[in-house]
Amino acid sequence: MAAAFDEVLGYTQSLTGHPGMTGRLITHYRSPTPLHTELRFEAWVERVDGRKIFTASTLHAGERLCAEAEGLFISIKPGTFQRLVKERARSK
Image 1 (cartoon, rainbow, N blue to C red):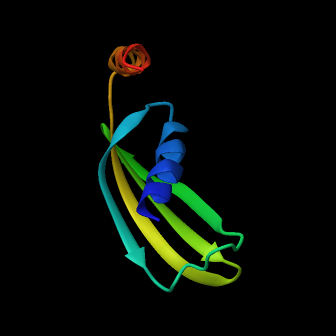
Image 2: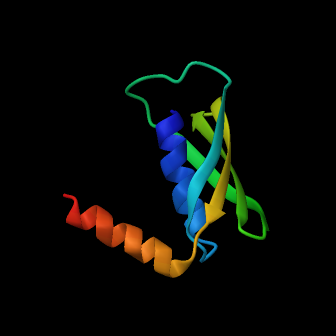
């Protein structure tokens, strides 16, 4: 679930227009998450404070809350982000 929250919150924070990297991810497990069941993630940006982007998310199976997450992302300069993307592509 933590990896899924990282993806969901990473996408959510990118909508601010200032892409960042995960600085902290806290996952709170509230009830067992069933297998082979449709799941629903909801995510939002709570606030932006300088380079810090604070996000939150919930995970539901039907009406049941399975987990919640809080994420802190640190925005990086656009040139730095593009350089990292190119380096990753070259390493494949």
